[in-house]
Length: 86
Image (cartoon, rainbow, N blue to C red; front, side, top):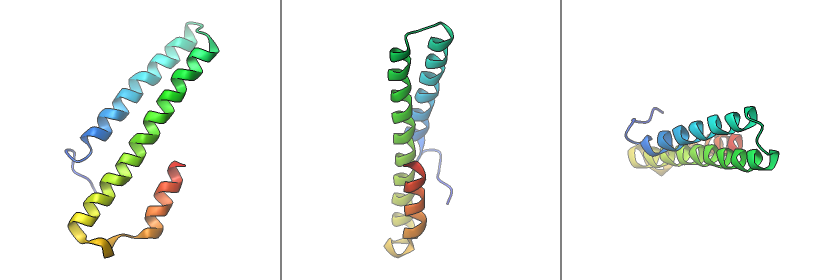
């Protein structure tokens, strides 16, 4: 299923923010920042990316339910998507 750009705008915004944050972590490492500081920031990037993934799955599920009804949900596929993010 393809999602409309408007439907995933919050997800793309979140991932763009994480992208910028990751660039900051890389810069920190290149500049010799403290390991603990870099790891703290990297954990924040990881969390932002994970939340983006879960939000994407939720958006797709919502669209599927709205357009095709509850019987259209492939629970095995949905489980696989969630586990891919774990």
